[in-house]
Every structure is written in structure tokens, then in C-alpha cells.
Image (tube, rainbow, N blue to C red):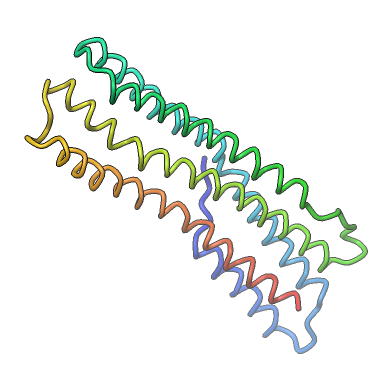
Length: 217
């Protein structure tokens, strides 16, 4: 199940550290670092549980396959090819661009990964290293989410238009331009806000990482 890391997690970290500080005039650094490392481990586990790579593939398939089938069916039944061929080309180009973009992001992330450090030698440095890995993982996940959102914002309105044309055997409005305007206002806005909420998860994690980093000083 997809585990969400929400603002409550950030507030829990703040409360734990405040209790630790208020409980002793001489703060046990080892205990403090153990707490912070535990919180970083929870963030890492939360990111692992999100499963965004497999979800992204599913999202592409759920829109690309029906849209491609509808476009092919529309060409067969109406002998109109221009727009449907353009739709098929857009599907292929967007998926290819997303694939190559993600390969580039992952390659850059791996090439810039920090060298491993021993947790026994410097616990603060070890925590910072793990946080760097978390930030790189989030860059990959954000990129993947952005590409999926662009795919849906651009193509889902076309899916609505073609589905309506086949179901009702005609355009939704007297003006074809108006049909596209309405489809993109409704369909595009729907997915924009849907994926924008998904980005809020990473904003919450960013706040937690900032607080943990500041607490290490």
C-alpha cells in the first residue's frame, strides 16, 4: 500500500526533538542523532513504499492504450486520418521523451551520488549522507511524476473528444475549436490539480529534511 508522508510526520519530528531538548540541560548528542537517523529511515521507507515507478507505467498504459485504440477505430470508421495519426504520434513521442528523460535523470543522480561513510566514525555525516540519497531519490520521483502529469494534461482532453465523437457520432459543440477549449479546461485542469496534490507529499518531506539538517548543527 502506498504510504503517504504528510505534514503530521514533520510535526511529530519537531515534538520529539523538543521533548529531548527540554528533558535535559546537557543534550545527549548520540541520542539526538539516533532519533534523527530513525526519522530519516522512516522517510526512506515511506519513499520506497510509494512505488511510483510501477504506478507511472500503469498510468501511461491506462491512457495510452484506450486512446490509441479509439484513434485507430475512428480512422477505420470515418476514413479521417489527420488528427488520429497526430494523436498516435503524440503518444509515441511523449512516451519516448519521458523514457529518455528519466534515463538521463537517473544517470545524473547515480553519477553524483556521495561516497559512503561509516556510521561509527561520524554519525552526523552519515545522517547527512542518507539525507542526500533521499533528496536524489525525490528528484527522480518528482521528475517521473511531472512527466506523467504532462502526459495526462496533454492527451486526456483528446481522449475525451475522441470518446465523445465515437459514442455520440458527432462533435460536442457546433464549433470544433470550442470542443477542444472545453476539453482542455476540464480535462487538463482536472489532472493538473490531481498531480499538484501529489507533489505536496515531497514538499512535506523537504520540510522534514530541512528541520533534521538544522538540528544536526
